[in-house]
Image (cartoon, rainbow, N blue to C red):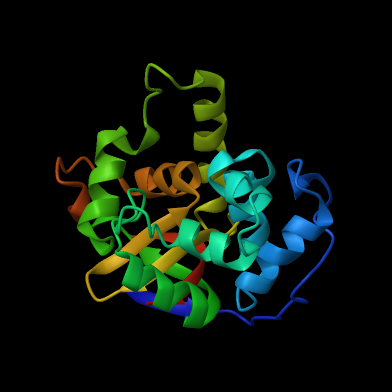
Length: 208
């Protein structure tokens, strides 16, 4: 896997995320940023918007009951309740290390599905790399994602996705639609997606 790093300009630890408050207000967002101060701002916004903490009972209920917000956020994002995160396949210990101590860089990766860890690869295969819309998916949104992928894949100019780099391969954390659509551009007809052509994918990468 070839990697070309681009200049990383660190952003302030806290910037007003506007519409990303999701009902929680600035104070809740600040607690979240205080929990994960090393995250680049764009990563923090993407994950916050995806999770909607202000309307998430797993987060808001314990906070309203007096729990320390930082502990609530840490426990939630490291899957402490189950011990393993269903989305990434990583354990609580792995996630705690990477999300609180990991080093982040913005990179343009040259990858195909074979560069991803087994858990992420299986999730993408189940979705057929978004080449067709599933029963619960908006076909218009899928078509839009595919069109965007065709435009951005040449230079790796897609809106950056979020990836955790592990010894078992790349773990996709945020940006599944973008990633699958872009990887599908490397489809060379081989039935094994791990043999597809490499494509360029822009990503925020944190090392586990």
